[in-house]
Image 1 (cartoon, rainbow, N blue to C red):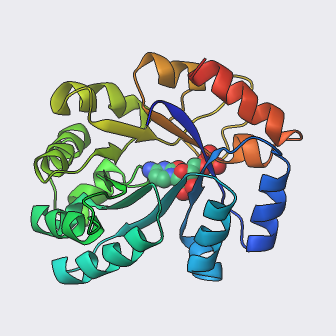
Image 2: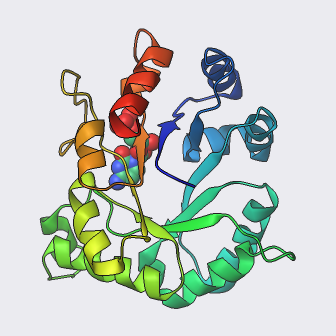
Amino acid sequence: MGKDVIIACDFPSAEKTLAFLDQFEGKKPFVKIGMELFYAEGPSIVRQIKARGHRIFLDLKLHDIPTTVKKAMSVLSGLDVDICNLHAAGTAEMMRAALEGLTRADGTRPLLIAVTQLTSTSQEAMEQELLIRDPMENVVMSYALNAKNAGLDGVVCSPLEAERVHSVCGKYFLTVTPGVRFADGDKGDQKRVMTPAQAREIGSDYIVVGRPITAAADPVAAYARCCAEFID
Ligand code: C5P
């Protein structure tokens, strides 16, 4: 899979999601399904979107004991998603178990990427609540390296971290980056943002874009603009 724009379909129901995707007619954007939609609609929403020919990043951020994660990943793999994810904080043992669970009888599997530290976690909270004293950037790079050594395919990270992740983990280790905004757009609750063109410059492999597309007056045009800046 090459560079692509993934639309974060943060909708509360299948009805709203499918109506949104209907607007794209012949195009089949890569879609991210998160916890809200998955917990509301269950696996059937994944099957419905897959049946329409979209690729799917199922963003459920698993984090549990290795056996539980392995079994859960085996179920997700059966849904034929293209990318799924977990928390690197679950340890290398958990990440290896997840890969085992994902791998199908024929040896194929979805891509598996890790969340390092959530971009919503501040340095202060990490130090005072999680008792992790290192600078955030070192923590993120260390978790990314753990993920790579466990055999994972990449990480979800801030666009600002993508360049360093590639230098630490190699250029083939995927960086999937949310926090993308158009230069003339509203930042909303995202603090540290980059434009699709900047994300391309610093080498992000996939950008995850929600509201700049889903809340646009013309979502199809906004998606096309993202693709033009990021891929073309
Ligand atoms: O609407 P917006 O473009 O901000 O959506 C970004 C998407 O990426 C949301 O689904 C959000 O949950 C997700 N995400 C994020 N930051 C992270 C991890 C995931 O914004 N660190």
